[in-house]
Length: 184
Image (cartoon, rainbow, N blue to C red; front, side, top):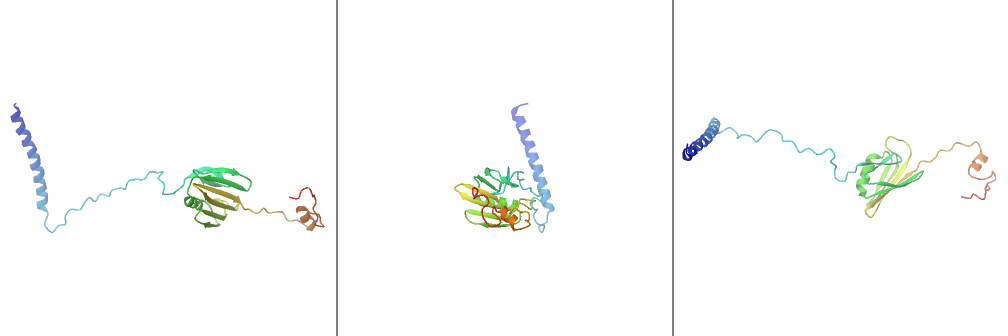
């Protein structure tokens, strides 16, 4: 078989394919009348690309592992110092996203928010009725510092009479200091 004979046969096969598909298209178009609307674009719904499970909204903070008075601090915040009724934390986060973070995690109380600071007053940790906390947030350069204070007033047992009340205050029944070496 020569090359010249094989080439026209393959071209003939290619033309046959084109003619068949063109003829099929013509047959489909001939069935359409002029009053029919043109075929619609694809009616198959296109899925939006799925967001990954760890996708965060702008300025959204994730919970970290550090806790103070039952409040979980966000990632990036570290506890600087803790005392019986006071805790300090700081981290390189923006103030207003941190306010939104605490707003979602604190109950009761109120919020005073300014340009460079915010204070939550008389709030409690989630699911708890005590202690009553004050959470103050302030910006210092690129760092936000958080001061969390336990404002719960201790409940003292009732005392039966005035001499017992004086004694609790460190005074004698006549109002003098019981121990002058401890005047703090």
